[in-house]
Length: 341
Length: 271
Image (cartoon, rainbow over all chains, first blue to last red):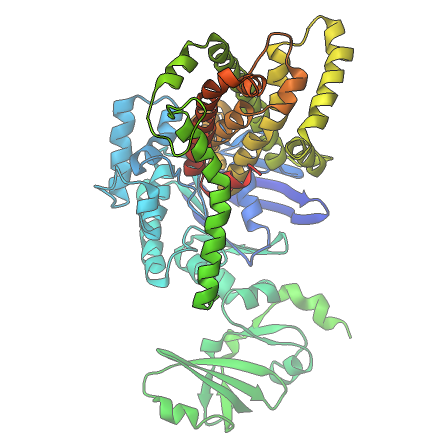
């Protein structure tokens, strides 16, 4: 087996009485695009900062390519970071920013200039060399930050919500570009985000963080189709949870089950309910249906034939829902909660 | 807020009167330094540079100017080093008594000069002199530094608060050792705050008289003290005007530069 690019063992971090990271074991393979997904305050950024060396773990170790770096300073680690606010040096030009890592590592002037120009070209910023960061747009700054990190050819690139400040169009475009760059350079990307779309779209594997712990690690498909806990089911995509009596009535046994909104369809026969709300969202329409059995379900349907006028009339009307049995996922992590009387 | 035209005019008049009250006497000193009439008859009827050249020939005034420059540079140098270090400590580290320390650093500028002066005088007599360091220029520099530290401290602290630590983290992340981070990132970012704080410190020291009176050793005469000593000698009056004019210019210029360098927060530190 090859040595993982990053190996976290029993990692913990407390800030005073607050335990931000409560014990994490994780291996990230070489060349992987790995996302850490979770709501703010779930500890994902703290884990990233411990990998980079900005925070000292309270307990546990960080190993990079098999070497224990837990107590090493950031400048002694072969990782580079793209910061959430980019952290470009405002008093330097774009070229000087990109050159910086090579300059402090004593790479000759000619060599580093050439490499910085190359790096800027790889993020499509030729001709911006002599600009100041303040003279560039958010998307351009983001790319400078990326070039500044990549020019050092680190083993691992850490990205701390790098697309958070961009508008939707630019964000989608950068998602594609980042993925492409990662494939081209072949280095390990660790991508922190609270945006589940982003994590699912870009990653080879995703770790879902919940309150300082990892709730689930897996491919985007595993995390989405087989959520390990109710939290994962709710945070990654929308989920309809069936528990207690409702589960007994609809699934036939006790436990916690999840059905994704797009796996449900409205039909003539099936499980009866009343349409509580109809939300038109362009390509799809979301229906909120109160089942007679007692659960509130969200259903998403493609707007292939329907028009808005016909949709609005459905509100308050009885409907029937159907779904395939194989799309009912049992959530194992929730057992002890639901079995309790 | 909208004001009636009458109120607006009244405000303008008050403001004009207030500013006039502050600056007209200063203008008078400047104008009189060129007034040909020995008794400063008003309005001045002939223009002369005679007082300026006799001030230049006055060795007492020239020595005093030099002493003031030395004291100002010395106090500024101490203020720059100590003020910057304290600002870093307060902004970057959490420790017991941090807020108290911040208050103690700022307090000397609010303390009455006479209190600072008496305290330093007796401290120097009873503690420092027995150690073999008599009062002289050095004691003046130390006395001035006590309140000059504030200007540097305030400017650097404000700058550090604004820039945060992200850029230093980015620098370390890119492989810079702490020395390189300071040289390439931290120092360039606080440079203009240091300059602004230093200029203000120099200006504070340059026109200080009370603390100087108590801390100056024998034969140490700064420019303000020289003016004070010569104020009531009628034959020195024209030269005093010239020296006062120089003092005005040398005090105002640094403040003006400092304000331009550091933006709004610099002005607030000189209260």
